[in-house]
Image 1 (cartoon, one colour):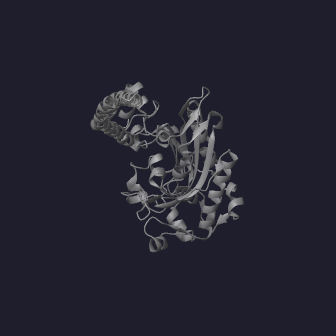
Image 2: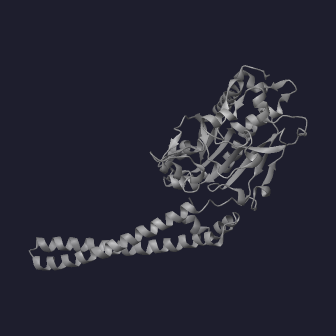
Image 3: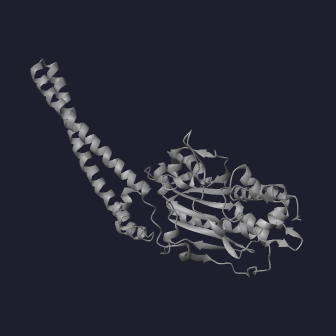
Amino acid sequence: MLEVTRIRNDYDAVIAGLQKRNLSPEVLQLVDEVIAQDDRRKQVQAELDQLLAQRNSLSKEIGQLMQGGRRDEAESMKQSVSAMKGSIEIMQDQLTAAKDRIEAILLTLPNVPQTIVPAGKHAEDNEVFRDWAGPLPAAGDKPLPHWELGKKYNLFDFELGVKITGSGFPLYRGKGARLQRALIQFFLDQAIAAGYEEIIPPLLVNEDTARATGQLPDKEGQMYHCTADNLYLIPTAEVPVTNIYRDAILQESDFPIKLTGYTPCFRREAGSYGSDVKGLNRVHQFDKVEIVQFQHPDRSDEALMAMLDHVASLLDQLGLPYRILRLCGGDLGHTSSITYDFEVFSAAQQKWLEVSSVSNFETYQTNRMRLRFRNGDGATQLAHSLNGSALALARVVAALLEFYQTSDGIEMPSVLIPYTNFERIG
């Protein structure tokens, strides 16, 4: 969440950044309420501190009077101290109310986009950061979409997934399952070679964990909630992996901290419909390898570019056409200050499919998590957090099958053959 000091010190920049998100005037007015509530908190705190100091002084004086045998004066003074109790309790309640209101507002306010984030309202306003330089497969060159290829070569079964669970839960089998596992291992090996530590996290998290990374209260509708135990199925490995460092104080020398993890991911994707959900385009359970970094604030933008290069190298090795978009303010996630999306080209569908989002959250998550580090002066300050999909499997599989299909089968990219132990499907 945003820091109150940042809102105060960079008020104009905060408002200008939030306006890129096309927020309503009512939401923007909450920024002013944060300042007003913080002024109230400071005023009440000062009055409370003064009253507590006065009570402590009187209590000390009462003790001295009792020791001197001046009991009547001490009893009279005790009545004054007792009368202060009600005022102190009122002030403490006012202080708690102000703090609670500030936190409630900050939990709802999104992150401030960086200055280079383009203005815009919708995905159509996103900016092409790096375009695909080569030719794209033309319509008709790759005739079968992945859902027909999956049926033809018995790679995955949507009907069985519906029977077992419901719509959006595909069942992989045979070479389809082996391809899925091969991609996961390839992505993990590449991340480990790039200096990331592998993590196998829990797949369910509690409210504190979901709140720390910004899934709550913003994304309740997208998460599967196990009500009996009040736990949530993770929408991404980002959530449990990032929370490893919740409530931690690091040393400046600890940076960079680089973590990677493979997990199944669960998203309700409420409201999705049409061609966007056909086949593997949008499913409720999918596999993903995530990369997470904690960085010194001075180096987080540099780290973000390195993460982009890492994801790009994966797609380069797979040989898939892709492009990178810089998201506009209206399409930016609630917690992100800047996000780059990778899209691969679906040869049969003739459309771009998102397979990765790489984001810098700056201090938005670490403020919620209370993740700090000691700088060279010994003082503590908030670290920066970043993450990215490297990569999300379902759409990578879809694009790979469509791109590498031939008239009599599907070829495997050479980089995957040591993992699949087969060169082709069909």
